Length: 386
Image (tube, rainbow, N blue to C red; front, side):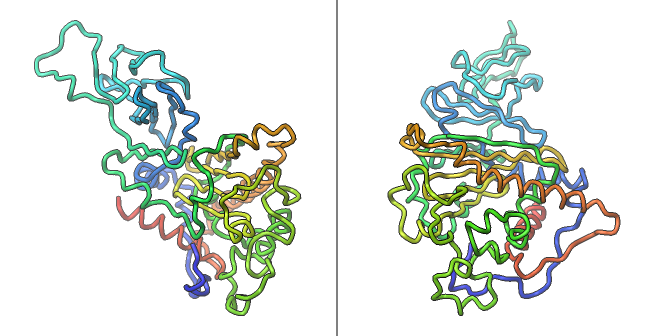
């Protein structure tokens, strides 16, 4: 994230993109699963969806199936969805509530505690040397953070969650993240590699052509810039109040809706600067960015389905008061950002198609694409750890 003291953020020297093969080659896709998706924190759901003991969800990441369950002590546990006997899947449903305090394999009825210890097998006798304590479920790291649930397949080797989180410039404690509730959800399958959508998120050169409605709401996007420091002559604009030059919402607008007006009450602890900006991003690569608006929060989750397919899921969070207000149309609030997401998905798909040209081996980044360059360098660094 930018800082005025750092000065102009644009690329000063020409840089090449990642190779086109990184987006279309199934073998490279497998390398990224191993280097990135199986080693970094991945957003699963809101805590409320696992709100009671024995509530569970399963999640597919690449070819890995993960089981997340809340135990009888109200703690979350996560495991590979694989029995230690002969490798059967343990839970075949996407979500629900376990009928007992045990995880029972549907194949041979091996039973595990909700903390993953093997409690019993279905065999009458055990071979010499067999010790149940040596066969717990394969562990997956799990983290609850401000009402969000994340997992990391690296298990005990996972880095600290907070070290991987980019919270940017705003004080996220000013948003009541933990107490917000899910009000609306949208999802679709995009015909593109997961990196394409991230790169699109990290630049606004596309905004004037792709997002005319958003550019009216956030004028700096209409200039093709993400924020004030992207202007080469940004110091000349430092004292300006023009949102086209310094960012933030257009005059009279407060939030991301069609008319720019809030429907629910704005969050009470936001500073005047946070209110005038109208949006702020929290990023956890590779799976999610969280858009903090003044009256709701939007979660954008990506999940790779194959080399050229990515699940896009968007969730909108609100206060209990807003959700209980019969005059508030939650779907209408969500409609504006959903339009933006669908526009982004559409251009991501045409970007993907073009990468199949046998003549196109690598692209070029322009000055405004510094954050794309940073993201691609992050991918390179992740791959170098294999």
